[in-house]
Length: 425
Ligand code: AMP
Ligand code: GLY
Image (tube, rainbow, N blue to C red):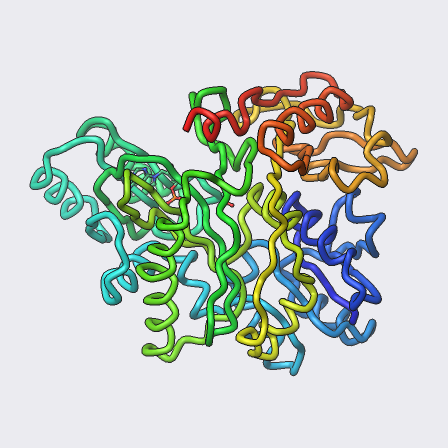
């Protein structure tokens, strides 16, 4: 089976590594991929939203199945486009991808099917949003741009003034363009966050092991949010009881909701949960694998990922049960100093060669570039991920940081406390 993976981040490198292990896979293509995916297959320089060119590639190379990594092409309807051309693709179609593409739509669905989530209001103008804030008159409140805003569309407002500023950014200053023309205001949820991802073919939904992301830039979850500075799995915070609750109260009602509304959802569902004691609440849904969660979840998956993706495409997922390694995986993200603010690129990276051919310690490329002279240089905010897999979380953390010590580039930055949240209990 030949597969095309769409995307270019650490997530797509991790998906490629998982697929490369499969005896079913005879060829891997990445569009556009990154320097890390070069060793796994062929990188083809096509942007993720150039649907025509992507479909032409699939036809030309007789690729059997396409898997979509990022949300942007999903929300833009890549699945509808491929299916209209008779090409096999795994991911939610445009209608279904609203689960991530519109927070207002997603909240509406959650309310209709009784999925636990924060109380909220949806607004399309500043005045009525301000009236709502006055009525609520409690802080923090959370102000969210409706559409996709590259993880920057959420403000936890500590006061009326902060909430008002966030609303003005959306409605008046148009900071998020169309994505901010509708705004969701919701109650603040307290607790600890976990990410539970699941595979679905529209008939059954199979949860993966739970992971925990580290969104803030500094240790102890301080500083501004980033795309994710590290992750580990499984997350002990998600006890078997919480997992069961998530299945019963989130995944099953979601699947039934899709069925009732005639929505075809095939692919990955990502539930971002807030867990407070024994209560769960959905903070957000995404319509794709998480980054960096994928980097720690997929190494633990024993079942062949290519088999799972085929089963999703063929709607035969009910025939599979997922097998997981009883180990722990940790991913430490190495970023460019200054990220998530401004940072310099094109720093020469050394130490990458020491990672070849180790199953328990892998380097993941996220924001790197290969120069004409063959050097690997930094090319983004999040540059690399070091992923370690070990029998226990403590051992995985130790090995991951041993891996980090082997890598160097000028002004590199990483958190030194990835996974510690789990050890504190
Ligand atoms: P979202 O894009 O909806 O995932 O929001 C980004 C981040 O903001 C989440 O991962 C949480 O850390 C935080 N957040 C979003 N909504 C809430 C909420 N209602 N209560 C507390 N924190 C939230
Ligand atoms: N790690 C958060 C996300 O993928 O959205």
